[in-house]
Length: 454
Ligand SMILES: Nc1ncnc2c1ncn2[C@@H]1O[C@H](COP(=O)(O)OP(=O)(O)OP(=O)(O)O)[C@@H](O)[C@H]1O
Ligand SMILES: [Mg+2]
Image 1: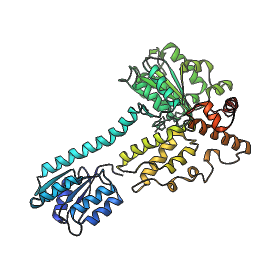
Image 2: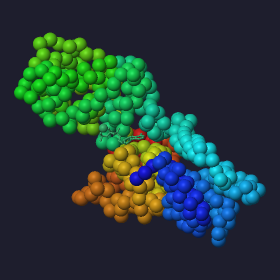
Image 3: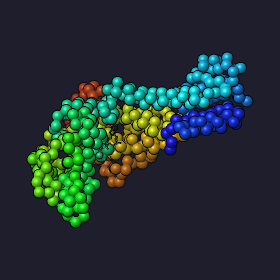
Image 4: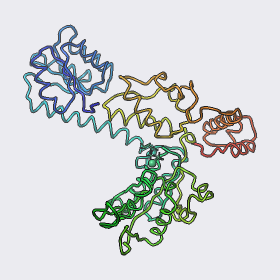
């Protein structure tokens, strides 16, 4: 799908339409219409950025067409194309919201320049508005969007820890933004001009891990035709992101621990240690404490990594961020696919808020991307949402064999979370609306493991 700006040329003269197309087609997605009616049909079917509109058209007059276009979408730019005798009409067009007019016969260079500038301005405006708004509202930090108490605490920790060299362990369920956090730490650190190197410990076969991390010398083993640097050396001066660190096999954990303690590594087949200067950020979506108990993870390595812990809350514990995140992704994919899908209706937002998001922010992002791609124009209707979100099918992560007691607990937890949300996190107020004593609420929170109030 093209994300080039879309221009619609409306003129009853075929030769003019064709020459405009020739002029613009290299940089823009150009469509042609001979009449106002045709133009309106095309705009309704697929949003456009700019219309080059002839003033004198058969059937519906250019000025009428302009009014209709602005009625469909006020943000569509229109440049009128006019013969000298109709210039007075062009002035009227400006009053009706046209951006400018050009007179026939037109100057090719002037036209392309004018269109170029207008489209550039438009692209910038689209992008800046959303970014600026989010940042002004304190709802975006680096690329991380959110304004719940839980996510603001994460912003604060990142800000505090980034300038130091401290090792950070980011934990959280899949799709909660662990990699975004790691990158934010790097971008805010004095190491930002050097590399951010990521290694997914779960994705590399066990027999290649050591070489990936520490590199090898030429001839270190069969197939090692050249010396190859490992991620530790590649990241030198920068940040090494060890993703899914919990899946490192025990022998590699020992080697990693040694590298962190000694601040030097040994390439496979090497004869002397090489000093390394990297900042380590590790991430895990599994419970390392449990892994330690089961002797799958070294306790000493855990303490080496967990100098500064950052715990990312699952999306279901900060549902207050859902509208913001949804708007953010809507913007992102509108921009990426050159679409203009409008904001989400309350009915849709309510359904999004009621859902549990086992795949967290990634699941929400993927959903919005899909909705934007599939939406022809206009808004997103509730019936376009997948059944599990419309509440018609059980959530996949929980389907099958949900016991009565678990279902009740989930209901209780959701109910209490909603009350807390409405009360802005004030427990006394929430307890009153629930008709229970504050202490009962505290006990329930503990029993149901309700943590964050977004
Ligand atoms: N707070 C957020 N604001 C904006 N985008 C987010 C946020 N959290 C996550 N995302 C987006 O969601 C997707 C998943 O994020 P990320 O890859 O950082 O998750 P993760 O925790 O590393 O997941 P996994 O454990 O599956 O690797 C990315 O596209 C990321 O940009
Ligand atoms: Mg990740």
